[in-house]
Length: 72
Image (tube, rainbow, N blue to C red; front, side):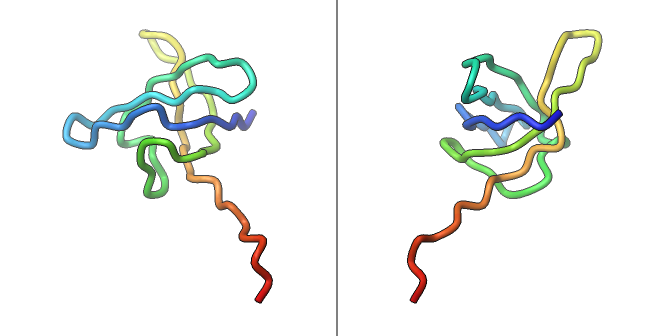
């Protein structure tokens, strides 16, 4: 199931970060290999939740495209 959240921080040099879910304020860690589009701190993203031996994590992470209200 798709979730939406905000990238709390993303440390590219170390290859990981955290996302906070909008609705529940839960936080999920992620690894760089699960990022499908360019993201940075503060971006709104959609993602899926995976599970491994260490618990739950964010995967298939993509930046949410914000539509402009400017129709010119």
